[in-house]
Image (cartoon, rainbow over all chains, first blue to last red; front, side):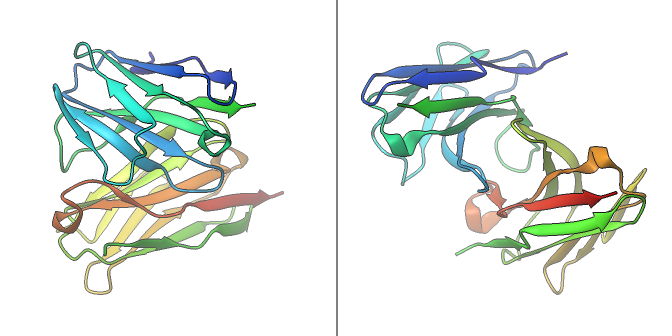
Length: 113
Length: 112
């Protein structure tokens, strides 16, 4: 049973055209994370929500925004995708912040044409 | 700053043991993790070890932690083709404000 669900599995967008990726969870976890992963690299944390508290990483570009309307859903908005934003985007959850294991979704592979 | 390092590739024969190594710098690490990523998929937590332990065994998996040398290893016994994946080492500790710090991942290649 999928616990962290990401849609769509593959997303193609045009250069500069806004795109939204979605994530939902059935675990009722307090923390939701968005990671960017480029080929053959480690995941890079973009931001996370601890409940409704938004925490942005210092080096996350302004082009990336997030929304968490309720406990179960979290969205990643890329306002003006560039070619360099093509990557796998991974959503993850944890029960609390800190020393907790993460549960990942299957990811959304974003292509920018 | 905090850092986690792994070799990028490991090649083993089917049926042999695989040992994937990782070094880290944050001496305040509380938990250390091994995640597995199959091609085109998300990451799956494989196993983890609490920093006051030096070994953890779970079926074919053995995790060894040398806290003095800040060295973590993952041994997979009787490696199978289904073990082909990228294995990421990660740690969290006070230096990173308890966010996960990831290694670059080790791609495990299984030879028949």
